[in-house]
Length: 116
Image (tube, rainbow, N blue to C red; front, side):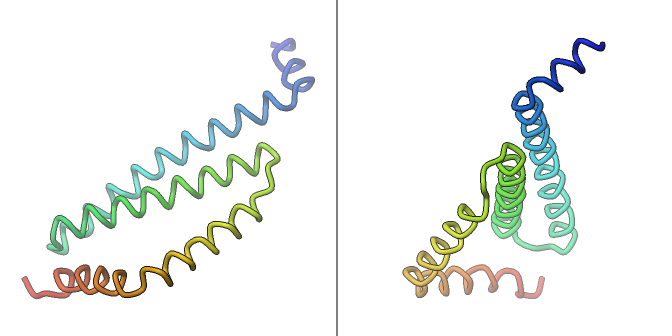
């Protein structure tokens, strides 16, 4: 047991890599939990299946991106520049697809707000 502790004390990158892998695995479990929770809540509210599927996928992707950023931060990679690039890309895509995204939002809101 002392040899294992000494190994991880000596080789810090291996320890950081293992912790990053654990973070990603926990993020995957959390993403699955959040998507199932959203699915249950939205099904109970009698929202259409396409909207439920869309929302569960978006929530899962967001949780996984957050977990990946945490893992990269644990590995010593600077995540502020990655977040800045993602924000700028999101803004550029949002402005380029403004009209299409407004139609998507309208298509999302119609089945959500319609009375059952």
